[in-house]
Image 1 (cartoon, rainbow, N blue to C red):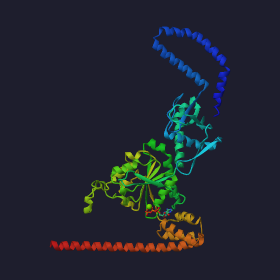
Image 2 (image 1 turned 60 degrees about the vertical axis):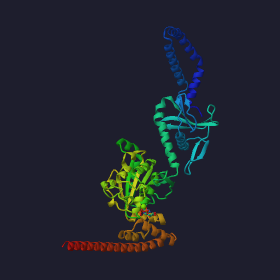
Image 3 (image 1 turned 135 degrees about the vertical axis):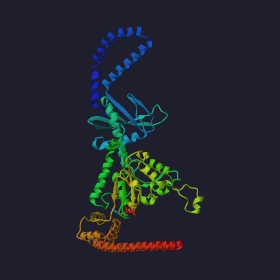
Length: 512
Ligand SMILES: Nc1ncnc2c1ncn2[C@@H]1O[C@H](COP(=O)(O)OP(=O)(O)OP(=O)(O)O)[C@@H](O)[C@H]1O
Ligand SMILES: [Mg+2]
């Protein structure tokens, strides 16, 4: 490494003035020597040695600081022993070395280091670029110049054979506080971010409570983004802004004493894109997803264990929350669960029943344990928002309520762009008309577009003509189905009323 310029200058000055340094020190010593021997004779022996030693050490350190005012800190590769440098213990932690390397891999693009080394990132397809041994890069932080170099030393003292590798940081003595308090934490934070962005994201799901591992996972590789998500533009922007504000406001959450987490409730009919929205959120934030299957969680304690084992920068999602548990009742009713077994063989089965309660779930969302780790998003999806206990979705728990509604014209434009690659077309107005009159979900429209683009070989005009016909057909079918359902419901209602009237007539007859 090219030595920091100032060190070289100081060293040259010291050597060229060696003669006068010794002359001055010699005359000073002529005066001090009798004084020292006087004190040595009359002062208590132990006291003299302690103070004299201290005095000499301090002088020596000051002289050393003048000759070489630069501090070095080594971050050693995991596995090496902790070392001590002139300025105290050398940092040695499993993740610090990787974090520093990742941080430096980002610094090379602005630097002129030419001899680099590339290693595959531990996860994902990215590469971590680092310095070849003996290379160095300069860095700047708040106007202060620092140097990093990659050092390899033969391991001479330990039982370990082979080389020891370090990332060595050099900086001026006067910046020690800045480096320790601010620069190194900044390096670790940034390094962690780079490692995080290089990793493969994961989609976790909880195993049944009897299994040893709480979560199992697969790689998460969902292609949906906010660009491909069909929704009104203003609403989409509002959600993205909210997510941005959440991600960037770590300090705000700390300052206001709030745990760094946010809840989103997605509600709407089937096929309006609730699950798709969760994937878009995860891709936007670069977070992992924990998909909680509540029906296989036995107790509140198991639920808490699941929470503790999630990592930060993740979305915890409970889909169809209204179906997962009986969460529609009041809390008093919940506390009485589990009730008597419904079937005779249930009584013989002594496995614990599902006893997750509403209050267990409330604690999961914002109890004391929910604050551990931070930077988490909780998402509930439901088709029936009106059936949920208000406590579960009150603001503060579910901070943002997002209605996923039927496909409007703006949502259709996004889908047309996704499937046909067109932004505008004369047939769009016909589609708009159909959508205004019928309640079609984005899933309906997406499916029609898929068929149309396959049959019409991706040509916009025939595809859109086909789409209009298909949508009209679907709208009619839906209308018919809705009318039939309504008629059936009315019929059932009438039958129920008649049965009740009959029963009361009968009981009155009996009473007479
Ligand atoms: N808003 C949307 N934007 C883009 N594609 C969508 C949208 N909504 C639905 N789709 C398409 O429809 C399919 C089903 O959507 P999705 O599973 O997200 O609906 P959902 O609201 O979660 O339904 P459910 O309530 O039944 O779970 C998706 O795979 C996607 O292709
Ligand atoms: Mg869904």
